[in-house]
Image (cartoon, rainbow, N blue to C red):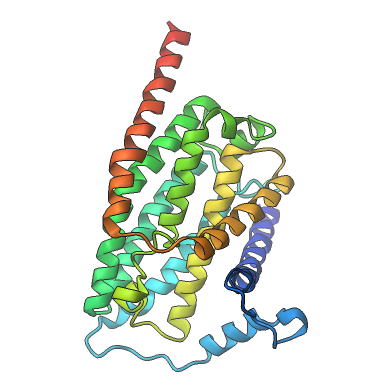
Length: 306
């Protein structure tokens, strides 16, 4: 048990370092995409830039809007980062720790509770722009999380359980990715929407909502929300690779880097869509497609059993 605890602490440190250098990777990648120079000043190849940004934000003065609800206003960013670090407990460590029997159900619970944290960040700020941003996020979360749950149920029926260890050992060479290509494509769209990333960054629409649900946060509070967002992207990328590609846990990290690059590439390539486009995509395209796959898989199991 003690070995599992140290494994988990080591993993959390690795995740936080990955979040720090993810920001540097994104800024450099967007610089190339927009034909400009990215970070170049702090350290060799600007390797110290993420740490300087973190120090600058964490030592900045913390201000509270006069109309905000004090305790939950400061509690929401802390809870947001805690949730998306706690979900890494489902990773099957080499030391034997972190193996949860119902890993994917735990994942769905964390994703659902994360929506309430975003809602609280906007609601307790008592700002109209922040409130509009959190209402947008809740409305879109309801639309695509239904498809997300169905995709997980489909794959759990095939794998025979909800454990991440079962998914890693049940396939090799991306067998589920080719067998369930449409649910995999749906998961990519859901990843972008769940992480508030372009072209579905409606909760943080700078052009119409200033900064969305986090507009009233600055300094340490903004840094925690920022870290939680990037930890969520890493988590969604890991789950995509673990579920659809599988293999040895050490090799899963390689395609995770490719999925992380996909986030950056899509941000540099696509503009923000209209809000109703995501609603139509989630309710009229992703959900019927996922239901058809669900009926197909359940029918195969019924034929096999009877």
